[in-house]
Image (cartoon, rainbow, N blue to C red):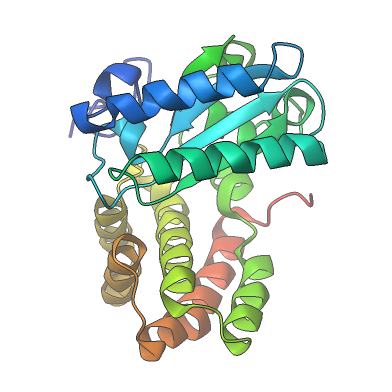
Length: 266
């Protein structure tokens, strides 16, 4: 398999996976509207830069199914007013375009994004998984990343802390479909980064992630395929959620800690 097929640049670093010229035609008006609404709402004094990420930026989005995922890098820590403005943009875009099934806008300060603590987590996210939409690209101030054990640990080495939250939500009667989608996605991505240094590349595709994981853990690939499928099409089956949270997740957290260690506390 070529470096490009493994998501790598010619120098062996992880290539940025999205680009504005990859946005499918059906989603171009959505992205244009998002850019306009953000520019109208957040002044240059508040907003450093804005980014598009996820399937729309990768060019794999499906009309009526895919979300619009955005991140705003703010010059200061987000305020209540910032969060309210972001929520208004989310609601406006979601109500205006049938192509998208939801809108999520994350707010993070540039201080956090460029911090040493976040260099291999949010920093990696900006540099490799986000596509610049507005402002100066923070990737210029971040390193080039390789598929190392350090990157694996700092991106997904906190699964053990997340499992109790999932169990609490499930016990409280949370919407099974919404919960199963989030659980499936996180478990699949964690399963992939568990084996990422051995495979020597990067992918955000859930199906491919499950198959790469299965090369190294064939005894668990069936469960990981279910996690990946649930991350794409959520399930209301309580047995699926129970398997993911109470069987696959604890095993994965233990194996991850043994192989890569535990993520630095936040």
